[in-house]
Image (cartoon, rainbow, N blue to C red; front, top):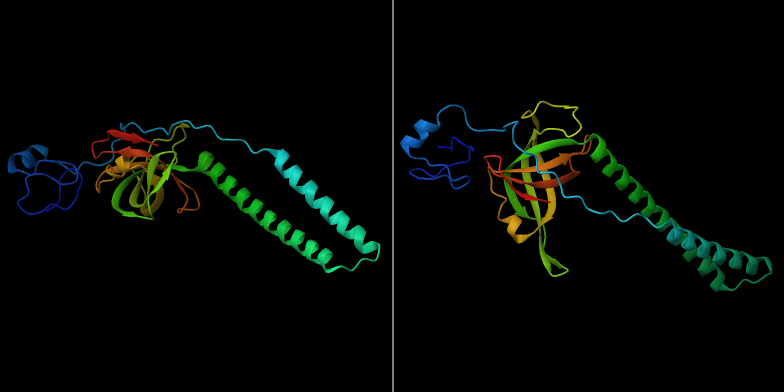
Length: 226
């Protein structure tokens, strides 16, 4: 049998659902009746906490490129004066490799910034019904706080969009299976119960890129914001 509220598998003869706590006695099932509980448009979306984003300092890039230019100029000056010391060629090769890696990193950062921008402007706000949770790596400690890397598999349904333009009707299935990789606290990890929900933004073209906003019970109660 399955729970009439969250549709989680229930052990035969169980008195309560292990996922949402719904009573599974004959009387309660008769009272519950009707279709299984699903996404309710009245659920309050757990807006993410506002975080300060450090702006990039252009002075760092200017300093780096100035030093590279000086090194290249000195090496070319030494070559023009007839010096053929191996150190000059090693220096030029090192500078060339540094420039290549720097530009490669800059391109990846630009692509990531573009993805973040698209996620904010065009991303689909979703309720994700949790299907499964697994550890995605070892736990880490930052500034005295512990974090657990998790892989959350969810079924995605459209949530209310803050801009007023609703690309999908609230409750419409957007994706059958989405995998979200995130770092959560040990307390938040305990809230990741199959049958419950998480709130997240799905990238319009890259389903692997998401932003997790919080966790919601099967009754629509916000239990954590990220």
